[in-house]
Image 1 (cartoon, rainbow, N blue to C red):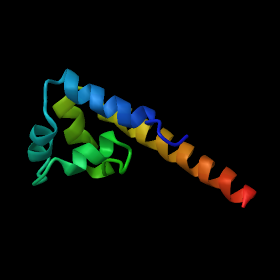
Image 2: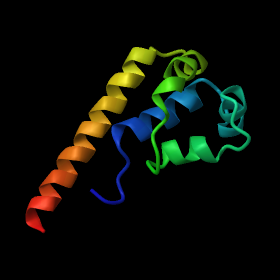
Image 3: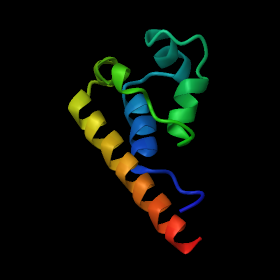
Length: 89
């Protein structure tokens, strides 16, 4: 649905806030020069790369396995939505 955030986007934002971190603090800890990457994850414009999930999990004090599961769920939901839309076209 357009305009609604996925579970992953919402989860990432809430986990960051609960960890007491700003977007720029997370970005710098992960080696990014700007907070745009983090913002994009939280606004569902992009998903975090799989290769940083363990580091992100440590920053947020959450299981990197849980992050991976949520990333997979989001990917599956996106693929299903795209498939349904393609059948209508």
